[in-house]
Length: 388
Image 1 (spheres, rainbow, N blue to C red):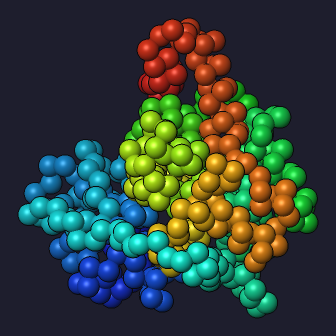
Image 2 (image 1 turned 180 degrees about the vertical axis):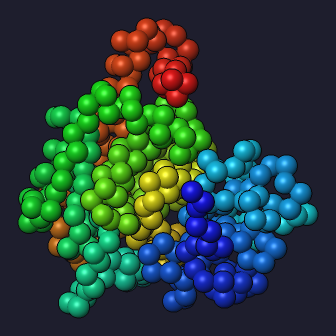
Image 3 (image 1 turned 120 degrees about the vertical axis):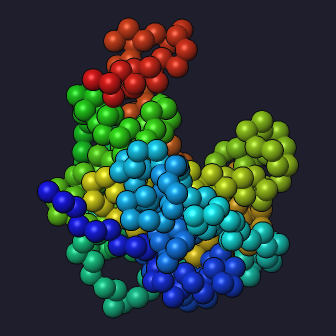
């Protein structure tokens, strides 16, 4: 059965993209242009393959194609090509070469009050906070771990179902139940409890969808893929996610005291946060391709251009200190959205740990003869599952 032709462009219409490229404007949505749901774009315009500055819409072409923009020589998913090469974020690919057209700006830090006002305005617009006539979105589900990020996203979709995944007793399921109760949405929450068989069956699908078999990427992508599959089976076309919040707003422990942390090169909080923002394109390639494999479109309010623009201007004191992280985001959650402190101030575990997926995949690897003393023992087990 032949597949329907793919649209030439995702995320924005051609006029917006042409104008952005011509003006070298990396965040066109910050001025009221661009899509409401994503903020990025990717695809083909004429004889060019294009991708937005944060890589929110991955685009690939065949490595040896004489014309990478020709029908059949490019795609949105790497799994549909023989030897895919991704278009760099902010890049334009033609038959001649790649050109870096868009770069993420590096604005100076704004005054504290000015910066907080800008973030509040941007997030309020992205989440429709205070809109008494908020539209019902029947095709959207929410990936919900119970942290401040996903609870804020849920506030933007008050009628949407909430999905959490993990092994019995894991942090994310416990947090999701408590957060859902705290915002009076227990009835909206669906808990997907994983088993070892679920992991074994899902690993090859994750690897095929993302083109990655390293343990970190697989254990991050797997919970998202399982949620997306369940949402799709329940009839939903889009999945709202909290992607980008940790990177943009200073959610990682390594940004708190960067001069003393070997994981970052910068010696300032703003510089360290910028390093985490620079990792977003690679992460989004993985996550968007995983969703695309099951026919689900991502909705990412924190990655809208207007939010990115405001976040880039935050001073270090509104990003992270030794006492708190994601300070501006949490203040917005408390003061503007009114989330309970149990959610607004809660610490978050990375998804691979909060769901126990990393722990249980390690357990399975060891049960199947891949001991921890071996080099990359979990990666070897993942590759065995994919080979089978």
